[in-house]
Image (cartoon, rainbow, N blue to C red; front, top):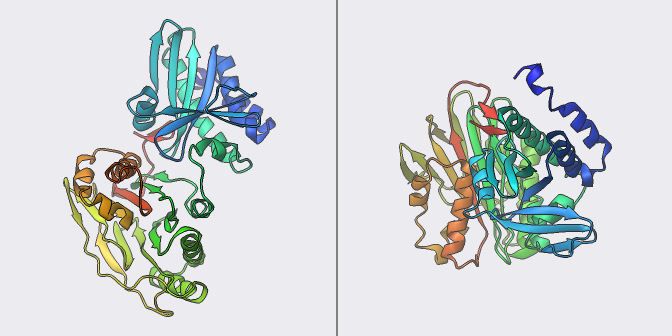
Length: 408
């Protein structure tokens, strides 16, 4: 895009206005400034809620017709199923519809595959190609605005909580990565956790170095705050060891020792730690008594029968074995917790779901798995359910092919 083509939308001016606004108003300011530039009759930002099943239309100034209110803030729920907003969030493509009230434009608000929400505009005319490009660029900028400003306010989190969190779930939520999705040239990954009413022991985590991808999926024994505290000790120990540059086997040993020292009698955590060598296409795995992951290769899903070691915390100075998985371009690995295997979901065909969703983005795959287990259990999980999906593209280190925050 040339300088002449982008002159119409001055992102620098938009971001300057955002910088001058308080964090709670930053997203609104960008949206309204964009609306002024494009002559929009209405502009709104809808943020994805924590259930993965709805968008939340945030507002203020005391709209009493809103579904939820908190002081001057309002929140309305827009279900994603079989609607335009859901198509835009899943497909990551701008959508334009025209009706008696004018033209509506929906643009995904996304950063590195993290589907943050949707920007909705009402325009007096059908946008041309340049205006569509302007809207897509502004929506991508809005993703950065939300990511930067949600550090300073609870407004976005409040909006996303269409269902209140318990104390245990609050602790658990803080153990998860800041983003549940990451797109890179050699891989795409996404995780999702569906909490049960009285459980809070599941976690997943990831971190990227220049040539290494770190992953973990864990499940603490017990219920409620007790399980959340066990998970806190384990995740803290793993992150501390990882950030110190310690190798995978020693990370596992130190995490187990930390649990053994600080957890009460009988406190343990199952889990898998994964270190992916991006240059060689090899995954190294520690399996601490955890359910086997699944691999989708050439359309066929199968369990990877990793040899199990004891769970973390069972013995004080336990040594963990490291197993190797050779990755091939096109492989999909799905790591999960036993909430997806609970007795109420015994008839759930997880392999079949993974195979039928082979063309889905990992973000959609993990959410569809959670929706399926919820349906199988009648909407009431007896145990947390977690899935972490890794797509391996393979090849040498390279830039991703992306547009407006999403892979193309």
